[in-house]
Length: 157
Image (cartoon, rainbow, N blue to C red; front, side):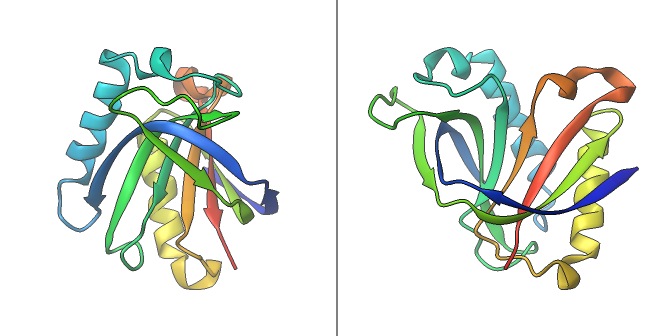
């Protein structure tokens, strides 16, 4: 089950991580995003990122071609305090923040995430999505088996 919370105001933030271009309609998204996560862990990307603001892992969806049916860029990494030191092979981005609606994916991961995104897509017309940058935040509660929780923030008008 997911709880749909009201609007949150997110401050602008800096981010460093790795990226892949994908789309939900190609049928390869699960594979491509899975490969990005695998790379994140096997290459210990977190160790290469300077100035992490916290240990929360961010998975960001941005550079949308259109809506949830079009291409987008997925980034996995961390919020950082500055973009001055970026290791080779990593992507540095600034996000402008703004108004967000928060969803909480609860249960076993990654299934709970998939289910929550399906709910978000189903509500697409009602949410007033901006399609600027949406993100998942994997904090301390994200690895607790059946009781895991991941916050998903959707940019809205």
